[in-house]
Image (cartoon, rainbow, N blue to C red):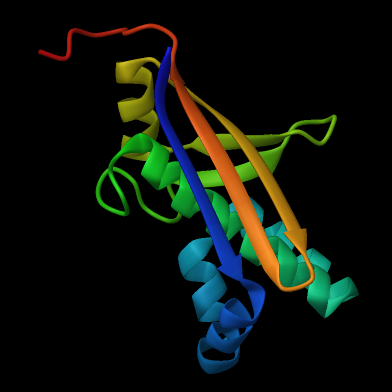
Length: 137
């Protein structure tokens, strides 16, 4: 059963301006540890690749928070959900801490799609409720 749907689109130059003002502190606020490592690796090779990676992750986290129905408030935080890739490349929402417990308690699983093109990055998230593992009443 579909629990929620969220989408987000961001102008990549908006993130570039934030990075220019705040440097890597901005990226560290948005990205979890595994994402940060991948971002730095991509940025070191080609700066634009790093910027687009950051933009897709930003959009995915915004879309995820909308689909979850919480916005950016506990247990949803920027770093509590990382968008990582499965061995075949499929993006996967990997939650940690209180957000992971919340997702498990409600039996929620997310499907995520991201894309970027020249000026924009976009994400689409569908959260499904597979089974409730604990009485939520």
